[in-house]
Image 1 (cartoon, rainbow, N blue to C red):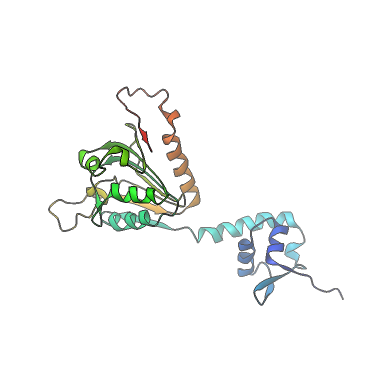
Image 2: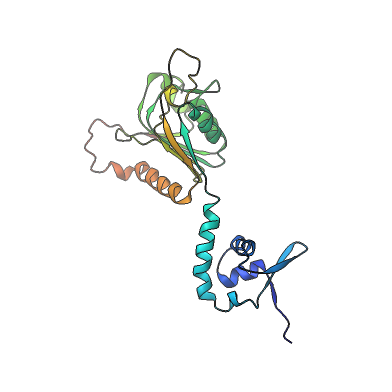
Length: 237
């Protein structure tokens, strides 16, 4: 009687041209069978499921899409929730922060100006870029001298996007600008906060499209053929 062959999960992943985590997903839903020997999963290679690799590929795609979808999160952000939600995401970035806003006004989050927060992130070695259409005098005064600005900021008179892209892994898309009325804490003050609405998600496809859109606007090539004569394109580092 032939002896059943067992392979490690990473070996099965190579055979099926998928990831080890996808193999674990197939084990979890019972598509594959095996047993755990100490720290490693051993997969029964004599299963009918593994007799033909090509049909397995499409089956894996279907199952992994379901598995991946369960890890994607969506959060609807409304009104004053923007204050804590966006602040938390901004302060959690590890590599990069990209912001597109129509208005960049003097806004404070937890007693610090937005300019100070962005400067600190940039000085920590994080890639911080802001595209804005308008910047008011208060935001400018927060910056001290222009040559002290540590983050990239680009003035584009055509930009009306409101995007916050965190480490190219999560994105906020909504109505909120970099203003006190939009993302600042106006609760309990005489000045009322705006009604705002946005979506925060880690959906890879949406993050990818938002990142590509941001990069396209950021590119100086976008200026070619632009008919706004009064625009003073700036890219300060």
